[in-house]
Image (tube, rainbow, N blue to C red; front, side, top):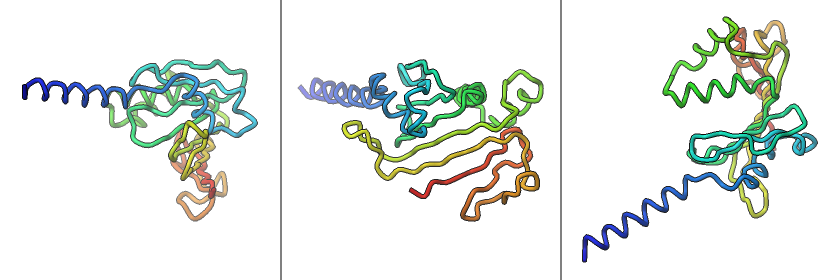
Amino acid sequence: MRPLVATVCLFVFLSGSLQAQSPPEAELQIKAAVQAAPESMRDAATVRGYTDEETITTLREGSGTLVCLADDPTDDGFHVACYHESLAPFMRRGRELRRQGVTAVDSVRRVEIENGSLSYPDQPATLYNLSGTYDPATDEVEDASRLHVVYVPYATGESTGLPTRPEGGPWLMEPGQPWAHIMISDPK
């Protein structure tokens, strides 16, 4: 009898673990993902999400310039992002490299940008991040933390007039790099 009880308990535990990591239905992923975008851009955004723990697919083809990425079901917490379509190859390559276990992701991408094998914008492009606790019943993000990023390839503190470390306002991160970007925290 004990082996049967142990087997049932193990099955229930494993079933619960697998269900907890399964991605939500496509409509819920779309609804949550676009929360990172400015409200005026949400309806036109393309949304990519998960069919399983590793496979990302287009859940909704949009007519605008933003691509929104649903929350990763394998990560703790809630985080969604929307970025200009010109950043899509760069973002996709970063995910591929991390999935392959590459630790020097930026080094690989820099070489690929410089040799032309990785498409990267040569003009400013924006990324919107949203983290917190998402409640699908209310479509609200509690304890929301927003971070807006404007990629300005190869920009420096001198070329932008921005500090290169946080000082309570916008600042330039990774100056001089292809992915130099202005960090803008939303106090809300």
